[in-house]
Length: 353
Image 1 (cartoon, rainbow, N blue to C red):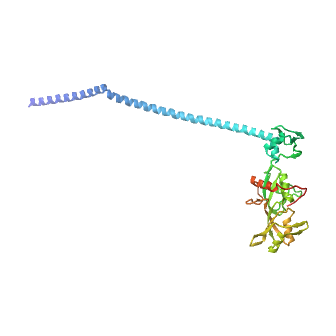
Image 2: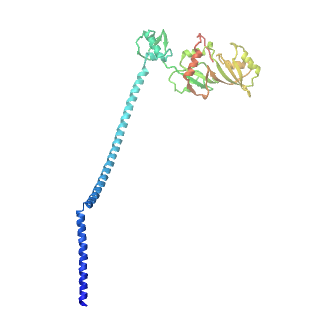
């Protein structure tokens, strides 16, 4: 029995040793195979390479971000510098323009001066200069491009020219304003409504009574004013008269047929009710430019004019222009006025609207 047990124990020991030796051998063999296995080594190398590559990418990204921040800082600096540069450049241009304006305020080209006077265009002015028809301070000037002072006296065939730019204004005149450039009694004048917004010195074309409202023209074109207001011009005017009583049809006929007043015969071109329901409101179209002529015509027939509004003058209407407001005439409207005044023969007569 003892011998069998001993043999068994010996066998177990031997097997244990064998198994341990096999495990150790496998470990050593595995380590040896790993060390000698190129494919395994490449995997390790790749891992290391990836780690290094990732680290490099992170560094590159940081550098790139830093460079972007540097660019932003550079842009900010450049923008500030450029902004100040622009301001300086604008200031220089402004100063230059101011100097040019100051020069222009004292000096002007001769052809421009002539064109501003309304005599002709600049091209035509150059022809007049070359033909010797223009004098400056009584000296004939034939050289093109001549610059003169605004205080110089310029003449065309002996006639003095004014070089101020011509302006044409339409106003919707309100009540209680005098149609004049000045009033010794200190009353309100129509020029007050311009509020110093017009640099040129303008004058009313004709007259409207203090209590008459509506279309009023103002300009510095003296020749046009004289032609439009001359009795022989026959410029059409349309008024709306509000009366103290209803006007009968017979009196409307009398206004068109005409009658004698203290300063001569007068008649309206057309007369009609403003509306059928308002027979105390009458529209009167007339060519005459005599003083207070519409009021005097109704007074002759026994009516008193409560309100008188001029709605049209020489084809110019006020439309949406409110009381006391004004605007510059369009080129088309100026053309109408010049056409209306084109065939007028000037005589030494005065007239009032």
